[in-house]
Length: 369
Image (spheres, helix red, strand yellow):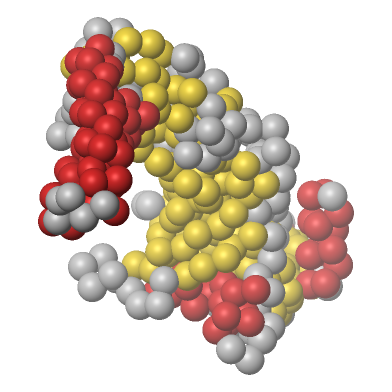
């Protein structure tokens, strides 16, 4: 009986140990994965820009004088030929009166000598001298009148009045450093920005056209994000790209134009240009399939033994916040986790549940729309 009891006890212990071993074995959990493939998408590149009108003309005095009248206000819309400023002309008016009198006197002298020459009483030399004096007097008078006219300053173009740094009574001359104001024609606004060589190639190589200018002409319309974060209502068109890169910065200067019928945009403003770029046959993955780890973007891949491995990747965000374009780190047909990211530890064995790549991409796109 004792031997039997020992045998039974041994069996019970073996069964109990077996159960403990079964309980200690880790459970392989199922997680959804996809085989990486290629897709098409569009990216939005952003560039800080400065805004300028079609023309920005500094208004300066051509003659010396004190500002007698200011006819406009800062920010006022003016027409070509509209009065802006009037300079004091009292001295010039007096000079004009004196010069006009000299013209009259010279004309009298010419009139007096003409009949004497005709009757051969005096020589032609005296008459010619008198005529020369008359021409000189007229020239002096016209010069003074021009100075008086220059004292009345008009707008050379339709536009918006800038700041008025000088006030009534200020003395100005053609040598005054600061302009009286600036008139900006803002019927169209130019947005100037810079791109590096890679960026320039990114948005021109994808455009249709045989020549560089044809590609520029066929670039997609661009958006302007204003300084308050709002998107400007009118789309713009890229018109020019500088012919060569800046030797110091390696950047190209680009100009886009925007219609500005409501005069909302003003010269000197700033904004951000958004340029859409079409990408074909690129690796596209959901953003929620990645995590940030030690300042790096990481995706979890599954190896041949179904173990999880963290792979650093280089990405560009797609507008909408749902996708990344992967530029480096993944290859076609790599398996990546789209479930349990941030929970499953590296090295963990999983049971992959393969999900169709196209289905995942289309599902995420529907969320954006």
